[in-house]
Length: 160
Ligand code: RBF
Image (cartoon, rainbow, N blue to C red):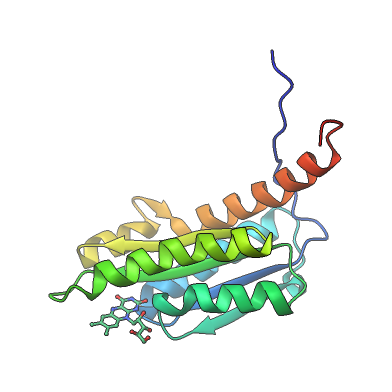
C-alpha cells in the first residue's frame, strides 16, 4: 500500500465563505441551505460561516478572488444556478464560472469549491437543489471541507 495523504471532513474551528449568485434564487437558496447545513453538521460554528451574495454566476470568480484576498477564510464555496435559455449566454457564463472559480483557488491558494448547477430544464434544477439528484450545495461544501483538511495533511506530511 502506498503512503496515502487524504483529507477528512472535520469543520471544527474552520472559517468558510459561501459566495452565492442571486439568479434563480428559489434554487440557489436551497444550495445555500445545503452547504450551510453540511458545514455545521461537520462541526463548523455558524458564526464562522459568512454568506456573500453577488449578482450572477458570471460574477462568482471575481467575488471569490476578492474574498480570498480580503477575508480570513479556509475555503470558499461558490454557488449558482444556470438554466439554459434561448441565448448563448448560458454557455459563456458557465464556462467563465467554471474556469474563473478554479483560477481564483489556484491563484490564492484558498480552496474554492464549484457548486454551480447547469441545467437544461427547471426540473433538473429542482432535482439538483435538494431532491432526486441530491443537493449540489451540500456536495460542494463537502468538497471544500475535504480540501481544507487535505491541504493541512499535505503541509504536515514528512515529504512535503
Ligand atoms: N446568472 C446566473 O447565475 N444564472 C443564469 O441562469 C443567468 N442567466 C443569464 C441570462 C442572460 C441572457 C444574461 C444576460 C445574464 C444571465 N445571468 C445569469 C447573469 C450573469 O451571471 C451576470 O450576473 C450578468 O450578465 C451581469 O454581469
